[in-house]
Length: 448
Image (tube, rainbow, N blue to C red):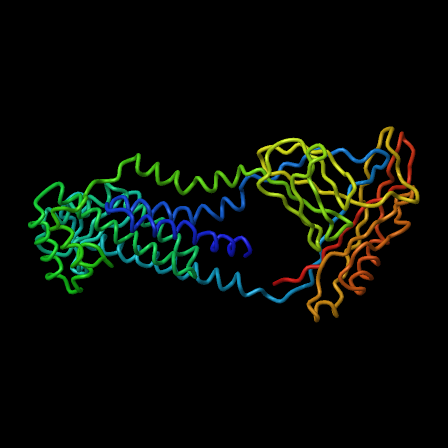
C-alpha cells in the first residue's frame, strides 16, 4: 500500500502540469494528447517506482587494522488483524472495472441482436445515440432509422484517431486511482477534448453548418438530453459554438506532438533516475554525523536518523571519503547512478577480533531464532530497531551481545534472548577458526 500512496501523491504532479498546458493550448487535438499522456503517466508511476534503477553497491575499503564480519538485519512484526485498506482498495478497483465490463457486455449484446446496416455498423432500437466500442475490432452502434453519413464519419474518426485506446487508458487510470478526484476529472477532460477534436476534424473535411445541423438532429431525435449527442458526457452548446467558430484552431496532433508531449512528461522521471545520490544505513550509530570529503575539503554533511538511515542527494560524481562521527571510514567513487553504502560503524575493538591479512571467510548464520514481539510493546505501539554488537567464538556460538541502541528495555530483552541462541558457521583465517565481531540489527515494526 505504501507504493500506492506514493504513486497517488506523485500522480498529482502530471495532472497539474496537464491542467496548466490545457489552458495554455488552443487546439483540442493537442489538449486530448496532453490529457492522455498525463493519465498514462499516472499508470507508469507505480511501475517506475517499483522497477526504477536500483542502487548499485559501491566498493569500500575498511579502515586499516580492523575487519568485521557482515552485519545481520532482521525485521520482527507482530501478528496483525486483517488490514482492511487493501481490501477496500481492491473493492474500489473491482467496482470500477465491473461497471465498465457490464457496459461492454451490454454493448456486445446489442450488437449481436442488432442489424448490420454497413460493414462494422449495427442498428439497434435500444440505442439512443451513435457510439463506438471495442479495441481490436471497433464496432459502431446507431439507432434504428436513417443515419447521416456525417454521423458515421464522426464515429469512424474516433477509431482512426485511436480515441478508443486513449479512453481505455483513462478507464484504467480511474480504476487504479478510483479514490483520486483529479484522475476522474482528468479522464472527463480527456473524453471531452476527444469530442472537440473529432468535431474539428469533421469541420476540416466538410461543411461546418451542415455538420452542426446533423449534431442537433441527432440530439433532437434521441431520448436523451442534448448534452449526450454524438459523445456521451460532452456539452452540446460549446461544441456547436466551436464548430461554427471561423477563427478556431483545428489543426490535428501529429506524431511529433505525441512524441514531444510524451518526452515532456517522461523527462522528470528520466532525470530523477539518473540523479547522483548516495544513501544507506549506519549500523551501531544512530543519529551519527556523516560528512563527505574530497581531499580535506568538506562537500556535504548530514545526520543519520534514529534507524541509522542517511541520504545525500545532488552530489557531483567523483572520489569521496566518508567520515562518521569524526572518524574516516571509507573511500568511495560516486558515479552518476544512485548508490548505496551500508556502514558498520564501531569503535576499535578491545576484545578478540580479526586483524587484516590472510584469507578471511565471512561468517554464515546457520541457526536463527526469531525474536518475539512483546505483547506490552504492541499494546503501547512501541517500535524501532535494537542495535547489537555480537561477538562470535571460534565454534560459531554467540559469546557476547552488547546493546548499542534500543527504543525500550523490553525490546532489548526480546532481541538478546533470540540472538544469544544463534549459531554461526565458524569464520576461518588462513584455514583456522577465529573469534569475530559483527553487527546485528533487529527491527521491531508495527503495521500501520
